[in-house]
Image (cartoon, rainbow, N blue to C red; front, side, top):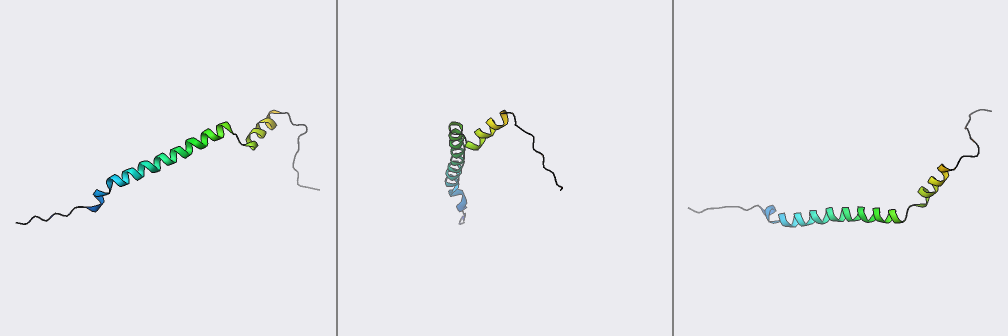
Length: 68
């Protein structure tokens, strides 16, 4: 009796898919962590100006009106 077995080709690529998955996850987290550290040391100018403007008291209240 001749035994015929077929092997799934996808099983041989399991280690390659694992390495690619680990690489993708580590790339995502490294970009996230590096951008978080960068913006912690260099905050955006608009966010720092917004904090100083909201802390100061407004000079005059301005209301929008629709009419003549």
